Length: 86
Image 1 (cartoon, rainbow, N blue to C red):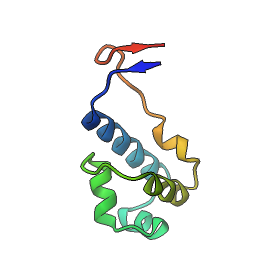
Image 2: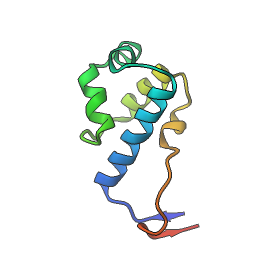
Image 3: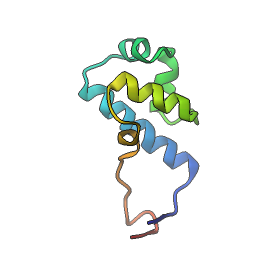
């Protein structure tokens, strides 16, 4: 699969996915932060696509949500907006 996606758009999609999963688990920013040992404002910035995070942070977020790390990357792409070869 070839995806032509900008860094900014990727960060936005990742943040949207994180927020969706956090809300499904019915966690506030503060609860999520406590589970992940991260600052709640940092999580807010990730969800808004304003931080390019490290893989270790992905691991902490997945632990906090009690999911596999790959689930954080399971977001949809608009195939009309991006060039996607499958």
